[in-house]
Length: 325
Ligand code: HEC
Ligand code: HEC
Ligand code: HEC
Ligand code: HEC
Ligand code: HEC
Image (tube, rainbow, N blue to C red; front, side, top):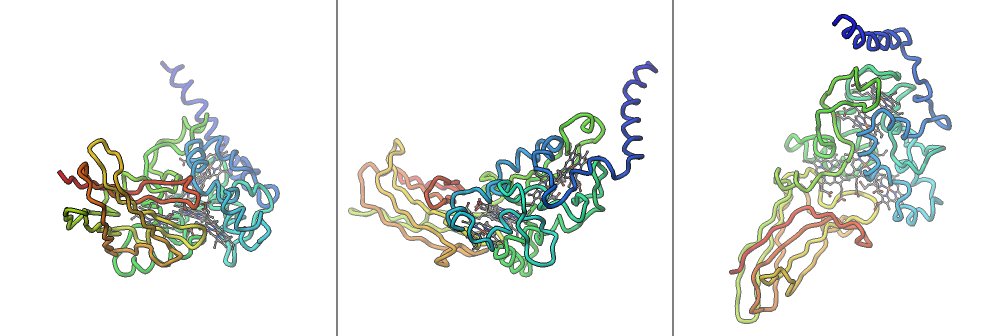
């Protein structure tokens, strides 16, 4: 019994002691800067879940994506590169471009390395140097360093009516360990932390009624089926779509369907930042529609999706159906 307890406690104790005596000097290479900075893969050896999520996120593609390469003329426009491959966001002036590992885009250390220490939201202790708790991580201002226009819209709506932070919607909260590697995962308990996907899932949009729509005033006559689609940005404290850069479209598709779901007629419009047709916070918009009458008409369905220019990305945000029969 004693032996068993000893076997469990002993490695933990020596590890804790090692940490204590080593102070901040463990893994000094993790907090190197500029050309000596580690790749994000290194962070992924311990922070495995966070690394996998970040890899799928738009931030990991922000330097290599086709639209960015094209619009910067294959990285010729150097003034564009800072936010897409930043050295660090902890700078008073303009964000500088990284010298190395640019393909990683907005990487771990761009958001977390502040002055030779890993900066984060809590006063955590780990095997690498960690700063005191940094409250900046729980504020929308962190995202606002690069998402300038969206942050301004958020500030405006936050002034009118207190809003959630960007993180509360875009970094889903979960209870889990921060590390998935031995021996550390044996020592550190689960805690509340946030996923690093940065995209709001469709399910949350629906359950929290952030974006709503309804099909109203439907009139079926001899030659047509007419009506009005009402869309409301009920709870997103920035426009839909949002952003200052790149192609920003939210496509609205309204379709007349038969009993099998086959499309009889269709009407499409786009909401764009560029043409100032984006749906602002709390804005309600009516989109009239008119279809040619069809004896097989069974239902009307409407969808809003976020789309890229070549339509390779087409993420459904919300959907609604109206039964005619
Ligand atoms: C050898 C394993 C290991 C590696 C490699 C590692 N970390 Fe950590 N890190 C930890 C542990 C352990 C903690 C503390 C966990 C806890 O308190 O639950 C931690 C804590 C943190 C925190 C503090 C979180 C807070 O609550 O404030 C940040 C930020 C962080 N790491 C970022 C990074 C980044 C960025 C990298 C890559 C440059 C990295 N880590 C590499 C093990 C590691
Ligand atoms: C260092 C600059 C920087 C910071 C800080 C930053 N982002 Fe980003 N973000 C970008 C860039 C650049 C892109 C474009 C990536 C792409 O689409 O290729 C992006 C893309 C996104 C997208 C996807 C947009 C799209 O078109 O699909 C979301 C959502 C997002 N960021 C949310 C956030 C949130 C939330 C925060 C704060 C927790 C944040 N970002 C902090 C630079 C940043
Ligand atoms: C766009 C900026 C951004 C990037 C890129 C980013 N993080 Fe974070 N990270 C944050 C923010 C903001 C928080 C604070 C979330 C909160 O309120 O708890 C955070 C929290 C953390 C934490 C503490 C746990 C938590 O959720 O509170 C760790 C550990 C961490 N990040 C590691 C990483 C690692 C490893 C990478 C790269 C794979 C990475 N981060 C990339 C912004 C970023
Ligand atoms: C109340 C929840 C909520 C808050 C708070 C919030 N967002 Fe969003 N955001 C959304 C939803 C929902 C979408 C639509 C989903 C999508 O386009 O993928 C979205 C979309 C986005 C997009 C993609 C825009 C597009 O149309 O392609 C970016 C970038 C973004 N948000 C950044 C931010 C930033 C930065 C903040 C803070 C200043 C923030 N958001 C605050 C819910 C929120
Ligand atoms: C202040 C920081 C910043 C600067 C400087 C910047 N960008 Fe971006 N870029 C972003 C952010 C943040 C996004 C994500 C969408 C948004 O919020 O506007 C983005 C998204 C993009 C996208 C969309 C990528 C996709 O996946 O569709 C393109 C293209 C782009 N930027 C091109 C450029 C070009 C060209 C320049 C130089 C004229 C530039 N950016 C300068 C922050 C920046």
